[in-house]
Length: 327
Image 1 (cartoon, rainbow, N blue to C red):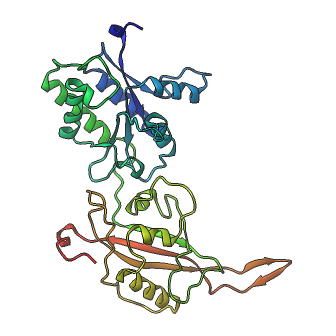
Image 2 (image 1 turned 45 degrees about the horizontal axis):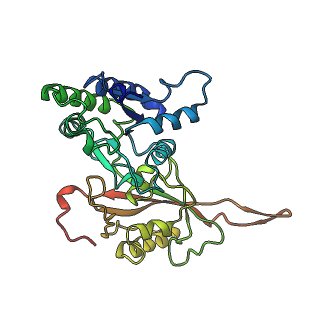
Image 3 (image 1 turned 120 degrees about the vertical axis):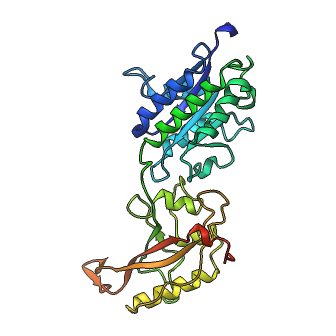
């Protein structure tokens, strides 16, 4: 291939629901220098009947940069994270350029926490685009032709950055509002409940149960496998924290159907960024008791008083109160 004909390829990873956003971002980035910059959007750039997995892998292999449009933590991002993993080759020390574009006030998915993240604000997007155009080698380590658009006007970069911000803010579930988090736990007959919520209680994950947004609070979003209450406690240093003992006391009171006041204890996720730099008051919201359990051979055990599910609400403390001592 004649290097003079080579183009800088940006792979845009996105959710199916965000396809329109990906198309618009493609157009805007390419407008910085259409002679040199090209973007790949899966779905649009894969011909009908093609082996799409092979096409995606091939496009990833040819790309000089991957841009992930991370529109909402509450969505499932398994496939996008797979694309990112294939691109970065995490088993290799040569980690190439990945940029995660995310809503201000949120954060990159935890598996990408160590890679470059850009809040979808015009000034931050502008800084990234300026580096892409004028100092390309600082954002892509396998590009050998120098700056992509060294003479691009600052006004043009600002115009593109503002347009991407506007498109991003209109995308996906960006208008979703989360006044608090909730953790839903499932308990079996084998779980010991005398002292409080058992660490073996299974975390029920899902948009209407424990959402990925809430799991991100514990730095466990995007993972797979069976999570239990003990995993969440360890993730935030809460195994022996005062708030954990308080919520166990609330749980015991709830089993006796006794009213209780919210505890003063605060949970500190400990992640110092715009999403996690906040304290939370854990509160028992509900305890659901289960029906009879089928033991096989027609035998049944009366368990209508046995707790089956417990829902914990994590109410955020106003930012104005963050100067208090964290427990």
